[in-house]
Length: 188
Image (cartoon, rainbow, N blue to C red; front, side, top):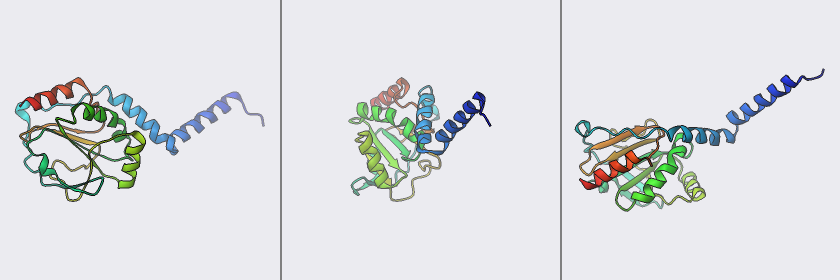
């Protein structure tokens, strides 16, 4: 039986699709696609009159070295809280924009990257990418509204605890609108 050219092409397409869907290549492919798509979607900022105050900062965290960190210590600061995992393609896709934002605002804004993952995997991911970020792990139940039922989840809190952004899913955090929001929150 002689294979026709169309059968060979169809077989190659099926092989390519299987490689993309069922191998480690699939993860990187999804990260790339999500990263490209999310770059067109800036963060939705909550209008000032509609912002709810998040008063509960009772959350026990631990940093990468095992040192305890009480989320309450962030009260009174502008906070960018990102709940993520290394196994989550949207989380990995949006991470470069968060890293850039942290590089530019890390000295004025409190960043907390809370990983829902194994410490070893997170350490390997951060080392491989060369990211020096304040990463934490949860030691207690997060306050209502901060839990990561779906990740990535990112919140931006003003100094008074107002939730200026509550975003689920990948977004472009390095957008002009986000930077303007942080500048405004820092000026309050």
